[in-house]
Image (cartoon, rainbow, N blue to C red; front, side, top):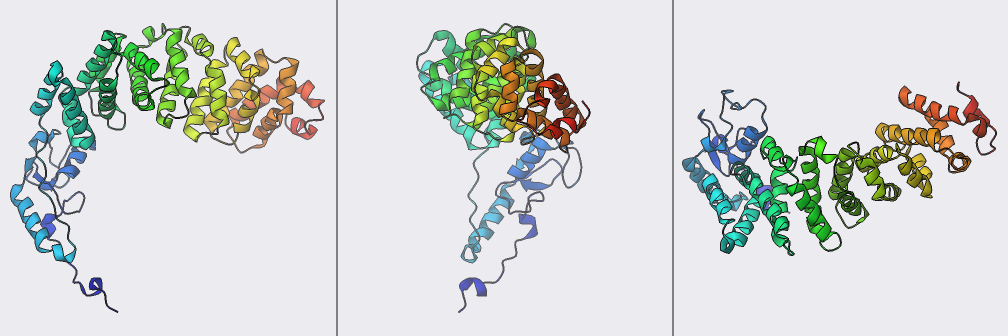
Amino acid sequence: MLYESDIMTEIETPQFFLCPISLQIMKDPVTTVTGITYDRESIEQWLLKAKDCTCPITKQRLPRSTEFLTPNHTLRRLIQAWCSANEANGVDQIPTPKSPLSIANVEKLVKDLEVSSRFQRALEKLHDLAIENGRNRRCMASAGVAEAMVHVITKSFIQGNKTTSCVEEALRILGLLWSSANNMVDNDNMKRMVGENFDFLNSLTWVLQLQTKNNVKVINEAMPILKLTIEAKDSTPLGNLKLEFFKVVVSVMKNRELTQQAVKSALHVLIETCPLGRNRMKIVEAGAVVELIELALEKPEKNMTELIFILLAHLCSCADGREQFLQHAAGIAVVSKRILRVSPTTDDRALHIFSLVSKFSASNEVVQEMLRVGAVSKLCMVLQADCASYLKEKARGVLRLHSKTWNNSPCIQVYLLTRFHR
């Protein structure tokens, strides 16, 4: 039996209909200043990401701004006519593309945010434009929309608004423009905006406090922004963060309904701020050690496990942190379990935790528990494993500290402790 596809003649696409970058039929052909025509999406991505901004074909210099791309209407009509003529042969129609968003249009919407009667409509329109495509987001970033969203969020905090629907939209727009994946805003300008005062940081803390138990979506939007804000701020004022701030961030780690990105952002915030001032003690007081152990027990993926162990090692460098760690029934066990199972980074931080505990908090009960839950056996396995020499040295250092106690124990085979020089 013959099917229509078996007798259909293969359609040959005219070469000049194809984009030189994607090699696909152009949907929105535009011509550069070098005279070469590309599909708009392909050349815009090229101009955005290329280290050397040159024409892919002629290798001549190109302005990075997309304002210098001229729509090739004649070629687009030819492509559309050809697609229509070959529709019966399975060629898809190409719709007429929308006119690119102009900076002037965006700037008008930003001005409308200052008029109460137009505020909500302007914010919704900006949100729709931001989620539509990357071209819109680049235009919006150039028009100062990210800065406007910071102002909207800060103003809501200062005025003490109880409803945060507009804040949620503003956070989503800001996230689309400022996230590391999109990287569309002027980072230096954003650092100046959020780094010179604490209003925006306090605004994000306020949002998280309001939504801790109510709106998961808002927290998912706010946490990556908080991470970027902390990274943008000067380290000196971050040493004066209040205990309430850390309680809010730790509460995010407790919420199992949040996305991994939100939880990772919380971990990044705590790691970034931990070494500054008295923040380590405040993070411990906020209950972070217990939450980190609980998170580790859930066997998260590699990157999150590394973040957990990096922060846990920071917190175990103070006496209160080690006390909370040892009070948790699963503390030593979960650290031991992850050694040699995740990554060298996790191994390094886990061994550092054991080193701190063995040096400064090694009561007889702790030393015996390390035997009981297999931590000592795991340290011996590190000595025998195919891993970095510095990890072996760390493990050997811990074993040396309490070798007399562990040598006399029936809980571990003697050869594991005596096989290597101590």
